[in-house]
Length: 158
Image (tube, rainbow, N blue to C red; front, side, top):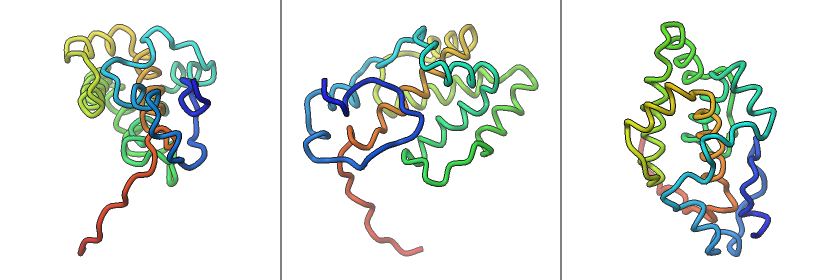
């Protein structure tokens, strides 16, 4: 497996894409696979992500949702609207509802097999493990060197 296609979690994006890396069969299998690249119970590595997700799950949730909007995390801040929303609904022990919705959106975006019932069970019973799985999956599937060059959006009038 090439260095770019290794399934090792990176907290922050690195290096720009190259043509060779992005067009390999390994890259396509990772970014377009119908299964999760990480198991739900592969939540203890890396330890820093596990610890932060267990102690402050809103930070992991906010970072994952920030990756949806901008995979490069250029203007990322740990204090963001998704983190605040997760914290507010957590006060009423309803964070699993928000997490189920976002998990379903992620599955739909990347074509990952599963169901709303499965998402609900994962977020209710193993919410922390599900957060870690989602963060690692989002990082891997939006990794610039796996996606390759992306054509910029066309010009538009405001």
